[in-house]
Image (cartoon, rainbow, N blue to C red; front, top):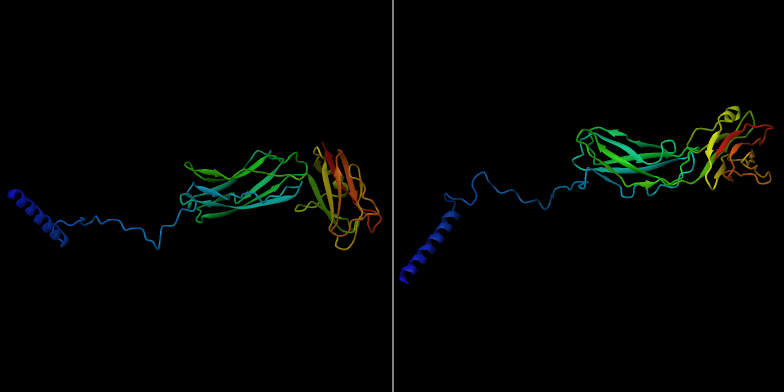
Length: 280
């Protein structure tokens, strides 16, 4: 028992002595020179999160949610933004549209189409849409925005797909006195004026009829005078006792195929007509 106690005492002294010796900077430091442990993350300045850690691109979850139904011939715009991850920054990007609508039934463009050496994490994107008046589109197909990193090892991603809604109507705005000297200007909002007179007769505005017909809305943009539209063919003549006041609308539902024309002589004896071709 005596030998065992002495052995334990020596072991205890050696242990205490070794700890003191090491703690005073002896020949066996806890950490070897050149192998210092990495610093702990700063609480005041944590690393910035990746703006889009789930992939190369992130899209607005509300993409296209504010898109109203498109009327025939009118233009509509979707404004959105694409967020880039750090791996996509500094790359050349391209944007395009993915849709199952036939090209002639929906005219769609995206801007920008391409960006070189992108440095920003948030890229604004604008999509313009127009359904031609002669389009057969029924309003049930989808569209999505696609973003791609160019190159052999490029990646791509698509936004959520949205249905492009349709309101089967055609809005035509007109203004002016009428007559051959100062004829009306007839315009589908956001587009060039329609052809009038002989040119209009030779190149009428084509309109594809739907099962329930197409509603025409003639909007009087003349700020001072009321007007009566003298129409023929599938478009009924406006009642002469019910002229359209400034800012008002003459609205008719067309359900029959054929050629139609409308004019308003107003203050002069003759006028120049605008022409439409309704097709089944």
